Length: 419
Ligand code: KE4
Image (cartoon, rainbow, N blue to C red; front, side, top):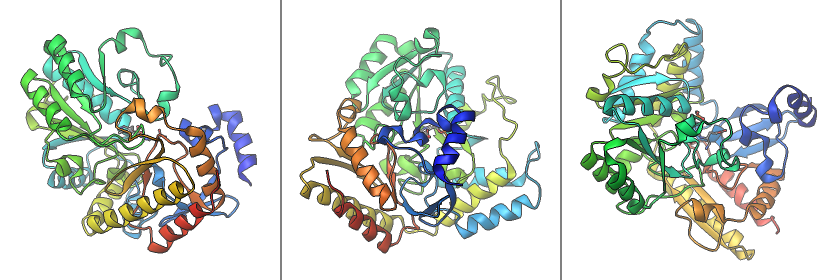
């Protein structure tokens, strides 16, 4: 069956024909293709067309699709049952591995998505401090929990006013522009006694990629310490991607709580939140902060996550970063030679290329980028078998599976684009 027919069927039974809004490809004025299978750096659609994939399931597949070690671990796990609703060794082993690689996560709890992880971390921060307010940054996205939908990034930025979110919930969410430490300071000066936590993407990935300015993360750390609030790093994108120890290792800043997702499941639905033992022990059944999940610590998902983290420890992050740096800057040059103004933000194996005259350091600058030009670029790349993020305000990822030929083929496709 072709994508058009499947999309028509999908639209009858699912809003917009999708289970997550970005997949509808509306921001690039297109319709989705339906995927039949994936392996390494490639996707194949139901009509047999092959794509070099730079979305990688929105980040989880740093090893590429269907890595043999991960697939093997999953098959082995499935043979022993798919869900127990009781403790199993896999969840202990994954937690131990995460603790080894990200030592600030002394204790953690497994959940099934990034949204669940951030939602639970916020409740824990509130329960632990006895305070209500949360500082979040405009254009940061922490999943679709009510409290975080104020001025959120990713697809949520398209929905003004967040219908369905009660005013009473949002009143506790204090906003600041990313990289604006003075604004955070002002919030603390005004309501320091009632701020439970500051939650931040240590490198923002949901208004395109935006790097923290020098001193920004340290400034947040200092303010939280000074006022007795918790610093939460949302490492759902950055965890195990910026380095094997995530953004906190790369920048040398220790948060009180960390939320993870994406890579820790290696393509399966896994999230987790964790941090200092003294804080985590406020979770039920040790303490009074409640959270639970029927499929939390699912044995198949745990096996996938553990195999992913083991395999990543054999990978050369520096080499992938060097290749991604060269690739992304060549891509930029190609577009600049076509007369386009491009701003590039990149770190490790993730980047965003903005159609912008000015550098992008926050949501105001990200929103001012030219979405029509990005859509034209995306469509022509897609038609040549290159799958980029279907929105200019998302990240583009490379993986350990991308070969030099894949990157060269992608640059070749970009050379053929016209505006
Ligand atoms: P999930 O609930 O989608 O697993 O994770 C939520 C989340 C939390 N924190 C950060 C920093 C995130 O980036 C995300 C999810 N990211 C988006 C894409 N940028 C997921 C893809 C989608 O919405 O379709």
